[in-house]
Image (cartoon, rainbow, N blue to C red):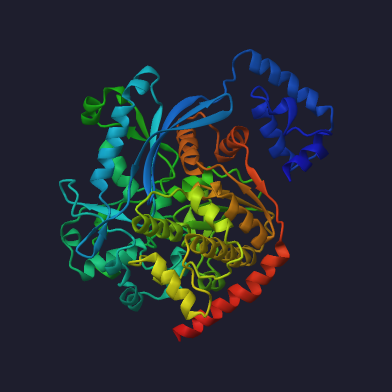
Length: 564
């Protein structure tokens, strides 16, 4: 642990007390890094502090400053958040929120991206007064992965991008795997095989003879498209491109042969660009509409929302893992190199790109989508709006309800009724069928915690490391009930928060791009200074051992037997 190293080096804990103040923060950060490599005589502290004090007092040093706007688009909502960076601390405030749910037309599911753009502009206009009084230093956009847009030769959008839950698109995986070897795909891309990966969607567009394949001139991922609308500049950002299953995990460039193999014009694709630099200023047409953002720089951040969330996750050591908890649950570790073994492929782990050359080795888990859809059905049935706090309270009243489901069962991807899908899954495995809202919520929470355990055990085995702490970030980190279940199921310390990890990561990379923050580790130190996590310690690990070995694994065995 870093604090233990610092005590060994200096005889006291430099991570607390006066050295953690803004004045000495950069020095303490340096000492902590050096401490991992060498031992210092206590007298060395004096020689380091004296010149540092002169350096600081002479005003040569200035702590990071800036105001940055994070545009964070998720599967359920989009938000504009203002980050204020000052005195080695970061404060974030939500300015604007709107819904981003998909649109279903004649049995197909789409993203209404032009409406989302209108909402971004509305958010900027509504806050123009505040921005004029204290101008922002940058804008960064992050969204979900895999989905994309295609522009024609005149830079016009061709059609409306499909939603990753579109059932027709998800039906093309079998044909796709007749063209590609699953082993070769994993060895090159390191990607988890999902039916909605971008390259599978491209294959589907070819099968449909979609006009975008014939007329397409530029391929842009969803955040790249919004960056284009803001600046007029067309670039493909690396972290989001890594979700396509068309990127070489070693070279970090497209595996160009794949496009030709499925019948797509490779000229549509530009080489992905690493995050952490300025993309360009907002377009002059937009400046006329919103004068308050004239001259504002748009930064190329880690535009895949999970990549930004990992940047914003205050990982305390290499022995820490993360769980980005929202519509999806993404559980993994930050690594220096991809893991491209057959074992990783069989366990369906993915190697997605991170910032500063890192790899996000993780697994996608269905996540709180299950609860979101049950909530939606219940609200229609009861003709009332429910809060998640009310649902969690109902779950607590039914904590002895032990029915379980496999969250990643394909039936839960986009069913007509999540309520009926969960009931049917319990019926098929001979378990009590939930009928009350609290029973559904309890089934989901227990099932997620046990699925996390299953994936966590695989993560430790594949990465050959013992993980000592799980950082839960994102909206799901507010759910103390599920966080405690997770600590018990995994028998590990859970550090919950920050909730806004994605937006924090977005802003941190903007500040790196602007030269205000040195690197990601510096940014994480700022996050640790700014937010206090909520710690969950395992309380009933033996009970959860029994739930896992008896209930969960037996349920999986019955389910698998029913599928044969």
